[in-house]
Length: 450
Image (cartoon, rainbow, N blue to C red; front, top):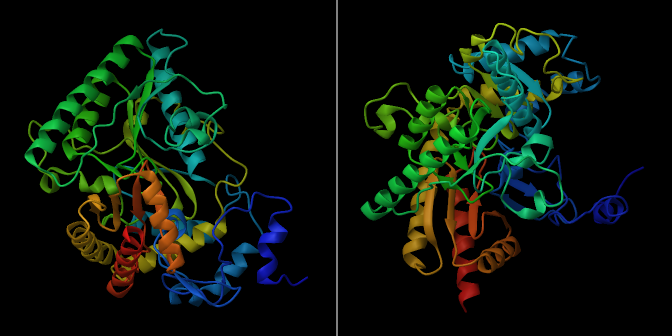
């Protein structure tokens, strides 16, 4: 039965809460960063990239060249946890070559970013509890330190970590795990801002040390987003990540970076935490160890989700990567998603899209700074790393009015945090598309200020 585009929302509303965007995605005609509405052919510039899961735009030539391969692997969904294919091996070979750091060689795949985080936690619990048992310590190793305004998912364990909009976790049972103040930066970075953040970092470190002391032998991991996305595009100093690395080593817990939203190029590097090196962020000595993680969770742009894990878990002989079925799922990720991600990775490499994200991200940030100068009482706290950009408005109400006004002018953007606008362009975004974005925002602000 053929469905008319104008009837899509009505049909969906019979069974689901159909309160999403109005346009009906035309899968064939949408292109680059542009969504075509199948109802009337109108075009919208997509600057939210399907909640940061889009990567190389719609109908990229490289994807279209591989339609037959994608069709073939979509005909049957194998249980990759136990049944292997050449396409699976080819994907993992490419993932290794282009995107897996040499310090995170252990890999686990699953479907969904929340479940990626869940399994990162399970790796940590298993590691910590087994370490405790080897010392004769029982029934400990079950807590996770996390931060205010974090978003790590909406399933099981992750709901005990997520604390952005209360509607996402309200009435669901949660663990009472240590929650730490998040010492994020405000912009522009004045001396007073830096001094204030340093004080807040010291407070956060004290809170972590207090949590460790009050829960002796019970902290399995500390988890943090390199940039808190859903919580308000909150940036941290590299030096803070160095302190977290040191604390993880000193107090024997694993350091987990949730890179579900920040991974795969949007910051100008494959992984956001790769910005946290002494040469790039001028970490002050002494540096005991680079602020690299023990585990990262990935998703969104990767299409298939999962975790990358370092060698620290080999301190335990029977860790989850050596003991069968300790972590597992029926499908072990989607083969179709893996093949699509392989194509995406090759496209990022061959078209130098990390450099595009870096250069056009700087262009976007500079344009946002121009808006800030033009509307200093309305556009504030402009910030960004690569294409991962945002600014604040005076209130959440004004933020919501601006996103609605932008939508009327064919621009799709999202809010985050209490009063922020976030930008999540595709890595292929052009300067012309950024100019269109800025023009729409300027026009929308002017309309709101009339």
